[in-house]
Amino acid sequence: MATLKYMQAKFLISAEKLSQCPDYTLPEFPLLGRSNVGKSSFINALANNKKLAKTSNTPGKTRLINFFNFSDRFMIADLPGYGYAKVSKEAQNRWQKYLEEYLLERKQIKSLIQLIDGRHEIQKNDFQMREWVEAYKLPILTVVTKMDYVPRSKTLNVINYIKKEFGGDVLPFSAVDNRYNEKIIETLTGI
Image 1 (cartoon, helix red, strand yellow):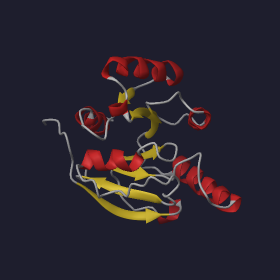
Image 2 (image 1 turned 90 degrees about the horizontal axis):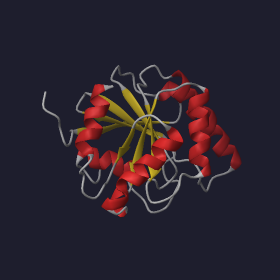
Image 3 (image 1 turned 135 degrees about the vertical axis):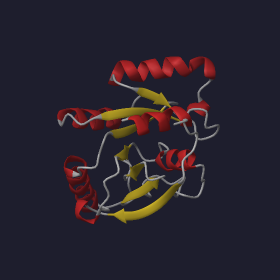
Image 4 (image 1 turned 30 degrees about the vertical axis):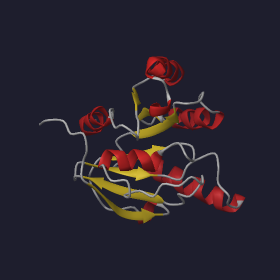
């Protein structure tokens, strides 16, 4: 089958906790990343639909797990960003409990996708998330976002730096020019 640059995608449902997640058997890829790392832009670019997932300049807007079906091939679950949220400690603790339950017990998860902002060094909370993922031996893929802001001459340096820190597969991504979409879709449909 020829590779695709975009896939048809639709929003399915939002869930607060595991018991509310949709009953599908499609491979699922939860997005982990700091607030404003570009999770919604990632979803929108792969779907070629700027309005599918809500984007915001205000960090911490995503409060639920939002499920998106991509051409009945796989699901992407947009999770609340870590590292910033104007909510009470009680609400943050509840999110953490629900998200851990979802990430550790959801059978449909094929691999986590951790998004890292390519414009900056890896942040402390990115390292903490990766340590948590590795402690539970969960499969993970790293996607470097905002590569449109990184000069092309430095793209390889950024990728190699993140590979050195995290290991495994590291894929670049740009929401502006979509030059990396095909490789990302090919990777997700091949897992």
